Figure 1 (cartoon, helix red, strand yellow):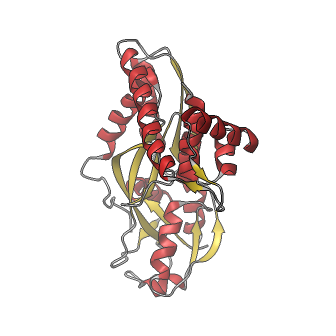
Figure 2 (figure 1 turned 135 degrees about the vertical axis):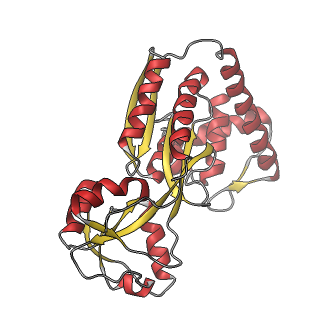
Length: 308
């Protein structure tokens, strides 16, 4: 059974690029090309129309794609079922969006260690697009990330479920005169302290401002809420903070929340995982259950209390 060839073919169909497929596997481009050719030889048919750039699936290729996905999914399910009664062991590689509360994540990691002491965790932070790609490339087993509410997955082909919600709120220094309910156009005239690209919240904000013909004036790009909120308190600019994380920063720095009419900044908290994790899936389930409990309470996706 040509499992490697089928995985390369499915990934090529999803990315539309031999170069991207090679980078994500990782293989050389020529190795990917040889795998596709071997699969075509084995099946006795042409899967790609190479007369166009980039190559596209032939009718036989479209049918083969669905069957390859079904075979790979069935093999993954078989592995999971045969390992269901065994205790997970080994390494769980998982990523978390940088904006998520560290305390909640730490509690979920501790729960895995308590329930499955043979599992070693490797935890990384990052942005949604980067984390999804790392799972797709099999460099991470799973990731928890923020995506704009209702937006499609940055990387298709992964198992994905929504486990909570978050709302970003706009804040400024309480000791400075700021409009209580600024318009989108007025927000475009203000300086901003924001996370660097590819932050999904920043993209969503830019789209909302653009709808009013406004653009963002970046005063500072800063990674991390501690420094962001300190700069906001110093009057460098206004910024965004996850609603559930606002209160301690509002108290510490004297921040106030700005009410923005008709400007939703709501996000889904999504768990994505690779298709074939075997028994380590049980450890991911523990993290999912712990985080879902923490993030689907009355505050989920809604505003947090703030000073000012």
